[in-house]
Image (cartoon, rainbow over the protein chains, first blue to last red):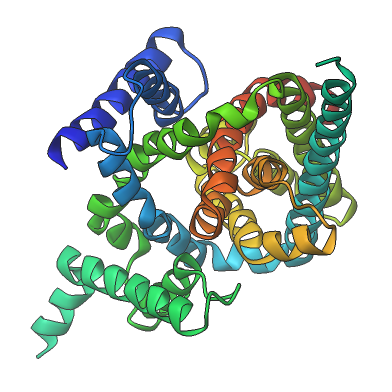
Length: 122
Length: 235
């Protein structure tokens, strides 16, 4: 468990250092995720790899980790009520258009790609 | 007696215990209801703890710093999204370009529709600027909204709300639109509902969750790159 956590935290720390050195608006943990992916590919990691074990355990409770920031909703109650309609409609409709757009574009390109592969002589 | 109440209203120990217990209750309810879409442990936790914070009149800033030991693990957990991705990466073969095109378009659509809808419905300028980066994962949304002249912490609230939308409505929407491919499901979910949507998919279908994690990371990147350009056109 500890070896795995060392991998996770170290990847995040290196990610944080990189985004500061490169001065980009990307969160350190996202860069850390890419770094850990490189490590896991490099090690040809199977399910016994310490980072895989610790990472899987942590991800089982991913939802817990959003509660602290989510409770912040109560701190903005007045602001949210003041602009309730534009906020609610904008979040809901923009979410819907976004998820459908990505699914339609990727789904469409994926099927074209599939047809191209199928046409290729074996 | 009032000493005890005062201690309970300010003690990180109580905040952490309440947060863990509310989450545990949410997990129990999810199992009991056979995975009902509304029974998302994060949603139940936020509602229960949020209600307690209001009822007992706890200062949110005190709560937030008290539960930092929980929030801290969001960073390593984001790194850990590489694990399911590593397991399913081979299924992305030949689809990298379609994925990048879909995610860049998705980020542009999310930013533009969010801002324009808020404007047409009479939202204030600061709300428009705070809504813009909502599809990016929470820490990125905060930083981008601040840069754009919005309210950072409110941007994290918006990001969490669209995350919850994905966790509750996403799988239902996929069924309604007959989207069955787990890669398509994952990429679409991660592009609009980042970590919270990802956690719902991870629980239901690891392969879809793996692509949601990847999509979340790339969408954060795309939003960070596109927002300054689109802001030039939108504001």
